[in-house]
Image (cartoon, rainbow, N blue to C red; front, side, top):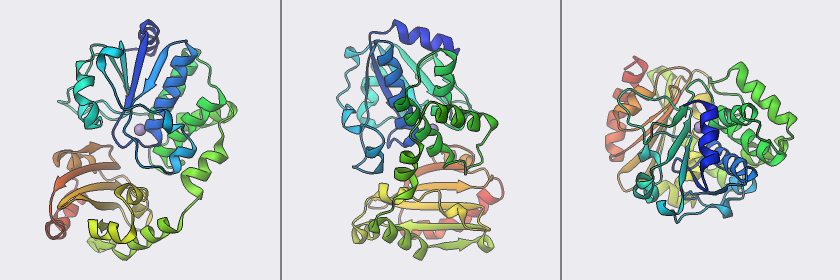
Length: 323
Ligand SMILES: [Mn+2]
C-alpha cells in the first residue's frame, strides 16, 4: 500500500491499537510512541500495547508506564503493527486477540522472505530502510504530520538504535538526512545518547567482563562466541536483557567477521544473537527457526551447553562459507 493510503486508513479509525515485536528495542518503542503521537495529534484515540522489559535505560526516554497490556480486539477498530511483519514476532500474550482483528496495517523494514505469510494485505514494508523510525519520519513529512520535539526524540532514538548510532552497515544517505531532519525538529539528541550509550552501571561492567572472560574464538579469530548460562546470570544478579545489551559489541573486535552471543533463557533453552560485518547470518538463523537481517539475526532453540560447544564450530564454518 502507499504511504498516503496508510494515513487514509488511520484517519478512518476511531480507536487504534499499536503493537511492535516482543522484547521491544529502541526502534520498536520509538515507532510505537511516535505513531501514537501522530494519531493523537489527528484527534484519534490510540494506545500502545507491549509487554515491557524490566525497568531500564529506555524508561528515561519513553513514558513506558503508559504502555497497556490488556488488549481486546473488540475495543479497537484498527491495529497498527510496527517493526515486524509476522504475527509470531508479537509477544505471545497478544497473538490470539490480534489475530481476531479485521483491520490491520503493518509498517516495517525487515526483509520479507519468500513464503512468509503476513497478517494483512495492508502493509508498507521498506526493506532498504535502516529503521522503522526512518520510515515513520518519511510518513510524517509526506503526510504533513507535525513532528514535535517529543516525536523527534522518539524517532531519533529508533534511528540510533537500529543503526547503533551510524555504526551498522545499513547506512544510506537517507539515514543521515533523517537524522538531520530530526535534529532540526529539536530531538533531544544528548539525552538519547546519555541513556542509550553513555551511562554504564557497575553491574553492566561486570556483565561485560564476564562476556569477555567467556570468549571463544573460531576460524583463526574470524568468529567469536560468548555464552551466558543461567548460572552465570544468577551469579551476576542479571537477567537476559542485561546481557543482550551487548549483542552488538563482539563483532567490533578487530578481525572478527561473525559473532554469536548465546544466552540461556530456561534450562537448556538458549537464544543465539548473530552479528556480522557483511556475512549473511540470516539464512542460518531462518533455517534454525528465527530471522532478522543479513548482518543481525537471531534464533532460539532447546539445546544444552554441551551441545552448543559441540555444534558451534560447524555452525560457524557453515555461515562463514555462505551457507
Ligand atoms: Mn527495527
